[in-house]
Image (cartoon, rainbow, N blue to C red; front, side):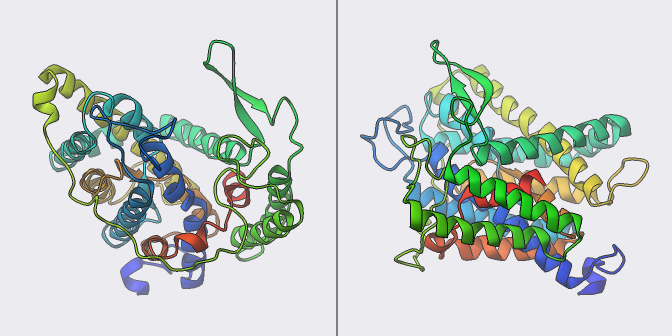
Length: 391
């Protein structure tokens, strides 16, 4: 195992890789809850249901199952093929684009068919050497700048997840960037859990305690369960701003559940006949463009964080990593979970010491297990995982 993953060569240990993989999973597990809320719906008659052009929806439980499935399988593939601790899951931003722009013009199967085509285009660019050439052609200082931007973005995700900062709607029904808490106040129990977790995690990291981030996540979760048991804050669900945003810190009535994978293979390429060809081409190009540069920035930032990026800025085996990333987009479309890509939250596992693909194998196995343990992992509120992103 050491020879295959080059664990000692990269200055790591199996224990660090396992811890890093677990931490990465905990900081990414929210996607199994969030993605269904972005592209899925609980019922057709819900006020906020995401309907396609024919009025159909993607059921939330089914989207959750395929989200975990694709993330688990492709994260393992990335670890085995490219040997990097770069976990993969449904790309945020792309899923919103599909839900808002694509579904309003076509059916869900047709939208996922275009996601598959986007992934195939990415794979072809990798085989042609174009994607790798562009990746290597970007100057090292610019890649470093992208890494800084990725780091700030990760921090912002954590602050928003925790409710420390929020989007503020205005009278024109648009949004200003962010505001502090609720009307300038961060006085809510979930945000308190985040602040305490941030302090605990920060101190443990500064003291170089092994498993610091994982300990911080678990300690924050225990605190959240205690706080909820006493205060009865309840979930947010879009109507209770003081509630828990994602995940509910209370022991579940049920631990195991069989996943519904009926969305796998439910695709269509009818968009090419439903819409003008130029429109479809532009939609696919938009997906390719977003995926192309998002992956470049994410991989560069993660490699730099883990000390895996040489001085020339050319990541070894980048072609393999980019190929898996393109394949992930194809798999995401085929399973109707939306395009999958390298997740910047992998930085939390890298900060814990992950340096090889073994961490990815651990993360991937946990994602696959998450298909059966949905009630259990939803106990971890996003406010308890957010400190890992900020740190």
